[in-house]
Length: 501
Image 1 (cartoon, rainbow, N blue to C red):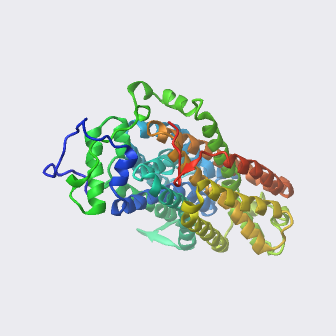
Image 2 (cartoon, one colour):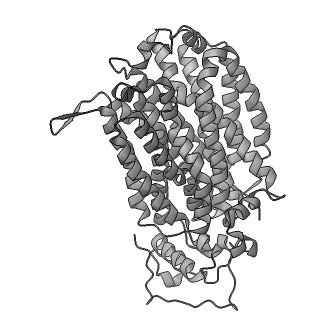
Image 3 (spheres, rainbow, N blue to C red):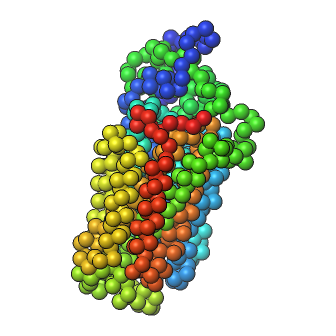
């Protein structure tokens, strides 16, 4: 898929006397077809890479702890190392994506993250592994944020909602990929050059594959024409419009009808607005501050709750299944467990049975997203969030009385899925912010989301062990507040959020 423009095609120069087209008209005239499908595939691989590189560490810890002999404290640091790296880099990543280019930053950060991830495979001690996973997270951040902006800018308002929802589902596909690969790889023995290779190291290599495929795909994709227009590079953006038109319609590039495409002056990235601090101020201007804070609060909270519980699911399932207490409540199983005993720190034989349940849970989360993708156009993103948040809130409220294993798993799944829908909020942010601060806005909300991941990952375990009986009531009460805030998200028009200029 080439994006070089044939200069022999019919090419009309810019003419100020001709009609001026909006970006919405220009990208819609380019059509929707093979280019957008390939774009979605590549962006989806980037999202899967981001999810697998961050979540995968929590899976390999059970196998790696005996090899590297790390303590419980080091185990907690390792679990959140990638996420902390993401938090440190998201702000910078958003600024670079808005000033240097979406696809350029995506390619370089993904390539560097691959390098650090490969080095982590050869870690000889705990702190080497922690530092390499931190650096992997630092550079993988763009795959969890800027990719939403990049995908959205190749779609018009009428076609944007479904691919953005599918891209959000790729975060869940990444979690499913992590659990399936763990189930397949961890029990195996590997030998190379007469040396035994620990299965968790091989599993880390498997988790790098989506990053490699995503990087290779990005080599065939062009820069966002909307970004080029914000930089007032009209000729370059016109070339991309024409090639997308050619790929989608099979018509000559010279037949593309929109030749004078301009953005509003408020959307252009002027020289005096390119500073990181000045871009940040734009997010908190009077007309945007409420929605910036609102989206940040929603994503922070659902990540603390949903993702925090998701990170502790392997431990919860371990104690439920180890103690044979499938007819008892989650809180009963945790009260009867001894999670700090030495026998839990380094098990002699790796029991992967609970990965079966994790795979089913991941599949269920993916199924929720498939349903969501099918109905999001008719319902709208806000209504979709309200439905799932309501189901999760009801599940949290009823968990206190649940003593049936299957219902507890279903309820936990519905609670966990609330955290997975932070991608929908990111897609709302991608629709809401104007292009000159779009990546910065999405990265800021993503950064707050990842702070929620770290907070949730560190406090959820302690809350489960010490206040489990009250935890789910607290979750239900907090989610009622989040439901109210969700009703105040930006208005939607034709399936897309009304952009604030």
